[in-house]
Image (cartoon, rainbow, N blue to C red; front, side, top):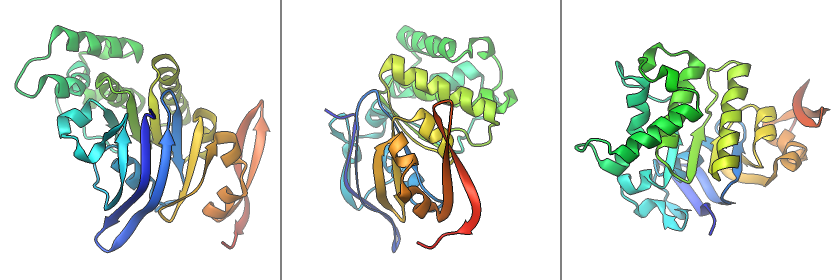
Length: 262
């Protein structure tokens, strides 16, 4: 059974079609990143996979369960979301914020169990946040706050985690550090990750597979190296792109020769 299966997905906003006839399969222990130009439908796709949007056509299943048929609490035990602009409640400690990821298991009116607290403590340790457990989340640096947001998602103990531009607002060092943490979780815990990233070089280096979307449709899907080196990538971005091998890693470089015709 696949971790995520998207079949014939269509999403509309009023009269506008945001996603049309998208199909995608992501296996357990796999990192899949959705790439594409602005307005291509990346955020719509991952939000629909996470159950935040309703589709007008097709289905999304998480480990065999139709996301559209799941109640909010059950869905939160199947898929976790790291949004592009997370809302952090003021005056909340890091430990309490991460513990919100356990709410689906004990509800709003019951206190966390000992098992819930152990999960939170374990996540804080893995993401090097234990020393910051008592700090107000609002006082954290950008990189620390993004780790706290990721920790909350990991505390949900789901097998699937969806991230929409998780490195937004971070400098390069903190971008790489966050992605390396996530890569470790995929490798050691067998997570299935579905993410969006603007940086094509980082997308290609960290993801196992890339899905190139444009105008709401999948243009190309496959192993990261193949998609990064494809002619379809330059056509979708309407740019002349070059791929440079740096110590075995593909670096995507714009050629600065103007726009190309579709």
